[in-house]
Image (cartoon, rainbow, N blue to C red; front, side, top):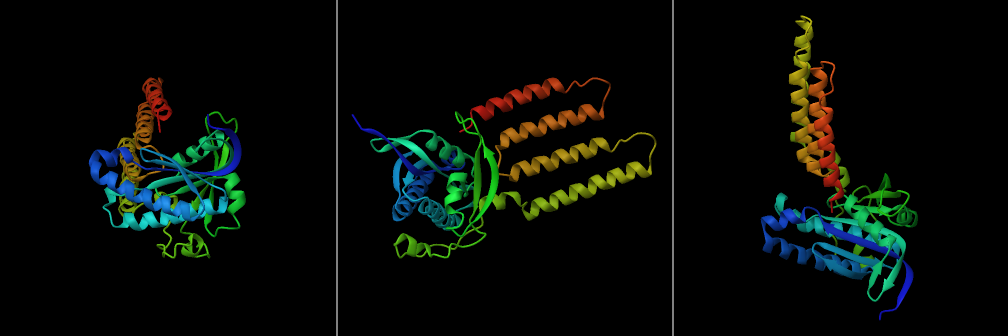
Length: 306
């Protein structure tokens, strides 16, 4: 029977965003890309003094004796994989999410267990595609030692943990770690230049999206202006403006990557129903029943998320 003990360690969790979709589109190509990415990740983890504990499906868990080296390994991993993905079609890119936590864990054989692992896994699921999220315990150790930017994300709720875990997104593209990655890893292999963190990219609309929002805004403003200038006691522009708002929301949902698109689509539907109810108000809030149904579906989808 394996000896059970405890230790303080840095837990590194990673998985692939939209892995199921990638496998559905091209199983063999996705598996080959996954193996290549895992080899690169394993090499970088080892070069920074870490140890790959386990892999499953698209997931990977490792631990590090050094918090600083764990974050450096994550940054180097995302930079190297960014170079790999730059040569792939946009819909076939293999974007990893990485979560890092410093915590006390139970060690049994080669495996580790405990809240520290669960927190790292939760941080990973909250990371943007191609991004890194760390806990406050990690941030406190690396904020003056690794020259990257950080964005406070607020407390993250974790199952079986009473209080939220303060978390930070690592902003890879804000600044550079002045120590060359090849020197840190000892591999002598030059690393790709840092890329902008996905968390920033996802909050910046694409040029096409900005144009669409601008056009919709102009149309909505024109309709409201025409309605007011030809006022006959009826605000008829409310319905086309609501339709334009729904179109804008659907366009945003198509492009965003921070939230589950199916859940946000349901939220847009609920808001649309509420708007119709208010614009056709007859003294009864009939939209409450379909909104409650939508909320129940959203709750089920959220509880069944990965």
